[in-house]
Image (tube, rainbow, N blue to C red; front, side, top):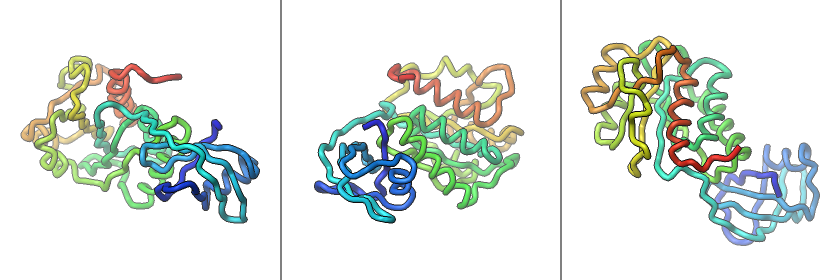
Length: 240
């Protein structure tokens, strides 16, 4: 029962159905048959041991054998607000921060940004979240939020407990919150051209704390993963 499949409707009762890409993956790729056992999850935090009962052209019916509440989430919420990089680097970023337990990704629009977070791009990222969740065992999906202007984000989250903005003049990341507080962390990562002075000023005026990720210039996705990995390692329960 190592293969996991996502059911896009909440699972209630003793049956479930796979349709679309998940049904095709089960039948055409994994070559599963009636009577095989698989694991299902629906994003609620639970996972379900299930047996295939019938296979049709576009759907698969299953009976639920057992429901287990299995949390593989961080013990605190972690939000990354990121000026998305270009192309396939977006997918790679989402894959890795999903594996590291990030709770929410907010695409931000900045003066120096190079990629616009249009709806088609966000849908591709949500598909990437699903694939990464199936692989890493998460039973809750990383949320891809609606895009926000960076300055609006800094103002709207003024009351959040811990707000970090990646900036070369900040304190080293290792000096912050070990372990992180239960109220969680929100970290903002700008584009490769950096946040503008006005954007940084808006963050500082609203209580965001600048944090340095070292003396080297990092790509956007590297910076995001560095922060996510630091936070994830506070938990100390990751497996390879």
